[in-house]
Picture 1 (tube, one colour):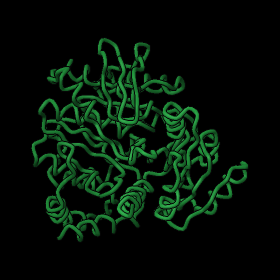
Picture 2 (tube, rainbow, N blue to C red):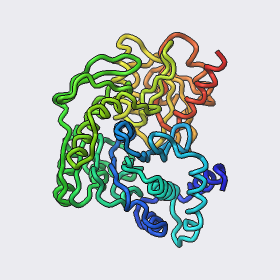
Picture 3 (cartoon, one colour):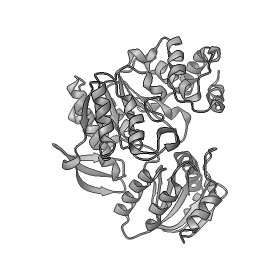
Picture 4 (cartoon, rainbow, N blue to C red):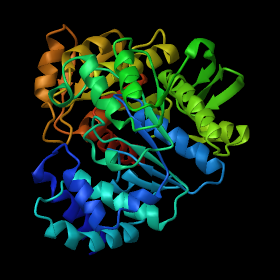
Length: 423
């Protein structure tokens, strides 16, 4: 297959839907020689903060000199971002070669694998062949029945912030959602929990007790904010002073505290990670569409806050940077999210809204989002394309914040690049 054919093959499985369960991916990986069994994983689940946590950990491990795999979803600009080696997306030729090899096995299965299962198996095979020292593995959805959960007991299981999302699949209560995330906990494992939600903690504790796993909960009592600007922030945590973080979100300090605890738990298991690598990795972490600055004057940000918990963090960060100035907000959301609450959270920082329809079957139409926003008495204009919204928003001197689905972020990137080329 060519690269284009490989991508078409993967996406051609989209019609099969997302079917939770481990039977198909277990069979597929077994037919491929169980490449995952020779790898050492840090497994990361949670509602929000998974991607940023994974990105920081990957940067730190790379700074130490380890050959590091990073598996994340969804992608922002290009599919290859989902399977990374040393923070570099898989090359087109390598992806085409892997998919060409596994396709006959996939096609011969009695119960066809889904798109995400094939991507997961391809990643395991790639990392095994590249002889990765460690793989930072982000859960796709939930935990217990997620395709990534066929791995054996990892070096560390991390559960980031838990909140309401994907309720139609994971449950309608924090306890039910936490139970799904706790499914990544393995017998005798080491578990690190972000904390923050008191209703989730007993569920995590019970799962750890059941599996005789060692639980550690992040204690942020020593987390102290330092300086911040449009290029990053500094903070103190525990005995670490003047840590520099290239990510702008105020919530990223809390994610970074989780990462620092993770580093210390890995050290306790014999993984060599110097303080120099820790500081370097945090300072060099970049992660697209997480309160990402695309232009400084006037400021233009894109943030993948796609549920109320995420949007709350977006608003918190914006108000820290611009306490007395409202933004023009480009907004696109998935229909299955709590869109009303997200809108309510954004109202205090919004001068006006530009609504769009993200390129996804689950997207809420921009006109429908416009009507919802107008029902709150706010000004909203619907645009036929993300590019049109970006072009209009870029006129003027006010800050611009593109917020909502990560499926929209790639379109914002492309539109912004084309817009700046015209200037």
